[in-house]
Amino acid sequence: MHAKLLDTLRSATNQVSLHEIGRRLGASPDTVLSTIAQLSEKGYRFQETKDTIRLIDSPDIPFPWEFSSRESRIHYYKEIDSTMTEARKLASAGAPDFTVVIAETQGKGRGRLERKWVSSTGGLYFTIVLRPDIDPEQSFLINFLSSLVLSQVLSTLFHVDARVKWPNDILIHEKKVSGMISEMVLTGNRIDYVNLGIGVNVNNSPEEAFPHASSLKTFLGKPVSRVRLLGDFLDAFEARLKKGLVGREIISEWKKNTITLGRQVSVATTQELFVGTAVDVDDQGALLLKIFDGETKRIIYGDCFLNDRADDGLSA
Ligand code: BTN
Image 1 (cartoon, rainbow, N blue to C red):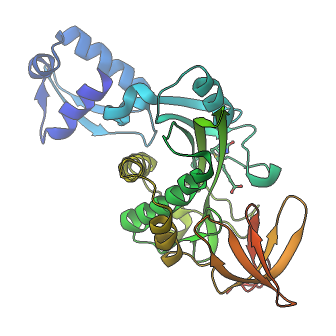
Image 2 (cartoon, rainbow, N blue to C red):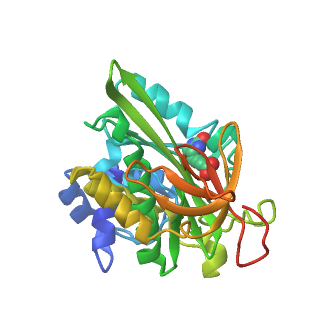
């Protein structure tokens, strides 16, 4: 009812009569009024006369009804430990493909390599439950595709130069605005689910605590719509996934949009730290790093820090 009512009011240029809304929604004027009262409590603002209504303003909150075609698969929380934990519970209880868990803030947000992901208000924190029909060895492509698609959506929506950094970060002017992690559960040698967790610095200000991170709000000088960003990303990512995951195509497109190649980097794996030049990313998503004795290391999992940053030369 929330989604239908909002759609009706958003497509109207003027006041709409309660009677007309009720007719379009197949609901009584009383039901329409009580839905409006519920939405007002959530921060939506309406202009009402005796028997007409107009939507004046919507809060930028990713409530499930803001994504009408996927409403039943969206789980929204004001606060949660980690969307990864909740997504795992939902996935193991049988949640369908493309179930999305969103939180305004996370008490125990998880980053890569056992790091914490600080999740302050204004950012976008979500995990998508995916049930792809692919070999487990191909699952790395999901992360490459999602960072590629998210960087494209950011560039298109906000006219910023969003680039990918190996393996799956997104940077704008060398500052991190998004990171992702994933976890895969197999049944035998088939994928049961892959949960993809994405954090985006949208209207938060991470700069003070993390000098090599920034947000869209900082770059653009004004807050931007998280609802629009999430909706556009989910639509674009789902459409690309439906086309199938072709490794060579995804990696070649990803490479055209990366800032990693040719750069002096440090790469931390769970055990070691390598320093060298990032020379290539192969079709399995591994980073080829030419270390200083001339040897080329092939690194499958790790985190990459730019050592030749344009701004201050510190790693990040
Ligand atoms: C990284 O760059 O280290 C990855 C960060 C991933 C953070 C996201 S926020 C939503 C989801 N829930 C989590 O606990 N982590 C991921």
